[in-house]
Each structure stands twice: as C-alpha cells, then as structure tokens.
Length: 186
Ligand code: IMP
Ligand code: MG
Image 1 (cartoon, rainbow, N blue to C red):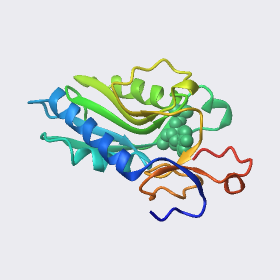
Image 2: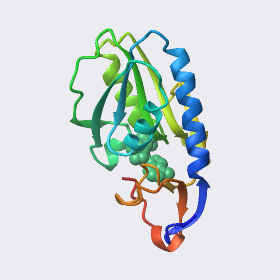
Image 3: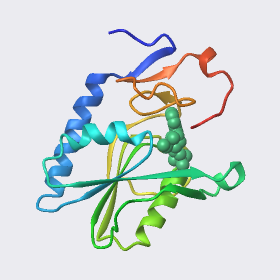
Image 4: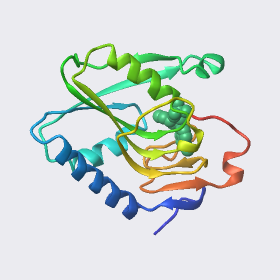
C-alpha cells in the first residue's frame, strides 16, 4: 500500500478499521432492534467513521450533525464549548447514539452530553472509534468503542492535523518533523 510521505507509521490499517467498524455496526444493530435511533456526530472528524458505521447498521435510523468549538485555551480546560451549528431536529423522546472519532480528555463530549440530555432524549449512548482513556479527565461512560489507543497523536480516517490528513483510509502517526512542537489539536 502506498503510504502518505508525512506518515511515520500506520497504527490501524484500512482493513483493521473496516473489520472493527463492521463489528460495531453489527452490535448496534442487535442492541437497537426495533428501535429507530438518531445518530449524532460532531463535525468534522466524526463524519468519516459515521458514514462507514451506518452502512453496517441494518436498522431504520436517522442522522444529524452538530458543530462545536472551544471558546479558548482557558475555558477549554473546563470543557466549555460553543455550539456553532445545532441539530436540525428535536431529540425529545428519541434514542440517541453520539458518534465520535476520538475521545481524548473527554471534556468536549462531556459538555455535549450535558447539552443533549437537557433536551430530554429517550436514551443516549456514546460510540467512539478511538478511546484515548489514559488522557481522560471527564468521567464518561463509553458504550461502544473501536480501539483503545495510548497517548499518541494520530491522523487519518477523519482525524486531522491542521485540517490535513482526514482522508487517509488508515490511522497513523505523523513524522516528527511534520508535527514539530505544535500542540494544535484542531
Ligand atoms: P477532548 O476529548 O475534549 O480532549 O477532545 C477531543 C478532540 O481532540 C477530538 O475530537 C479531536 O478533534 C482532538 N484530538 C484528540 N486526540 C487527537 C488525535 O490523536 N488526533 C487528532 N485529533 C485529536
Ligand atoms: Mg473532533
């Protein structure tokens, strides 16, 4: 396989990701039998995982998107985020599955879950492709996860570094000279 020249090492290959996404889709299909869940993903990174996952979910379902942004470095620490694009529909009385590409400190998701719970959904579960649990600050329950990942910064399959590399079909580590000392997480 041709590897992007900025990638040092592949952590999860396209095949590994596809197999795992298939398994997650099958489990969700069983768990939500005869229900019609609404999948909500956070723009932009989660979309790549979401669309592959949904092709493996053999249920009537709905999908919606939310875009959120951190206020700034100080409030970011408290997990205070701003809704940039809200959901199109009411979620009252609906079974919700929040789909994320990666949960790191969990602060963003923690805020989002509080926000969504205030709208009285019937139920709410979390599905993430990557779980960086060693970095967790917020106390979160993750219902479905693709892979446990150590404290490494990865790109591809929706994950970016300065908006690049989202379209790589695998997940990998950037070469040190590409990433430099930047702590940019967007
Ligand atoms: P947190 O869970 O609130 O700390 O933030 C999670 C967000 O940080 C994710 O949605 C990503 O945008 C970003 N992020 C965390 N780890 C990585 C990574 O390894 N690569 C790319 N983005 C990451
Ligand atoms: Mg994100």
